[in-house]
Length: 126
Image (cartoon, rainbow, N blue to C red; front, side, top):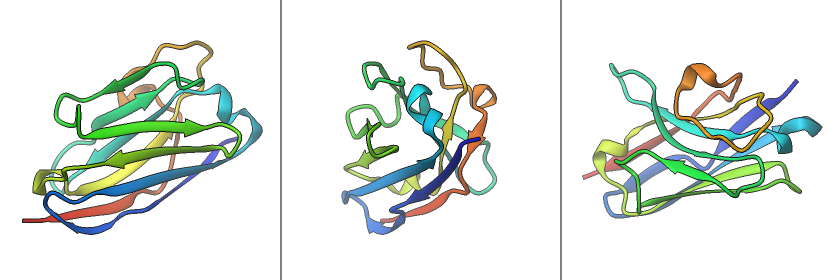
């Protein structure tokens, strides 16, 4: 069983930066691809970024490409999301999720992910 806990959310002005962290319990976490998703009020959950188990492959939503960077440290069982040049439209609850999958393929479909954290709020003021 994998349990995920997000941290690092908060209130920031447009153009600012935040670094989200996803801490996992369970020895198998390092074998799984991990994704970040977000959900704004009244909207569906959407894909933000994903990373393969070894960090060798990353995938980003077009809306965050070149502004956000996903990384992982398997020795520490953490996955981070560095968010720069934040915009008001980035305001949402951010979730990390792990997919029980063997291989290096990363996907953006939230239905393909098996374990979810409780989320952390990110608010970007204009």
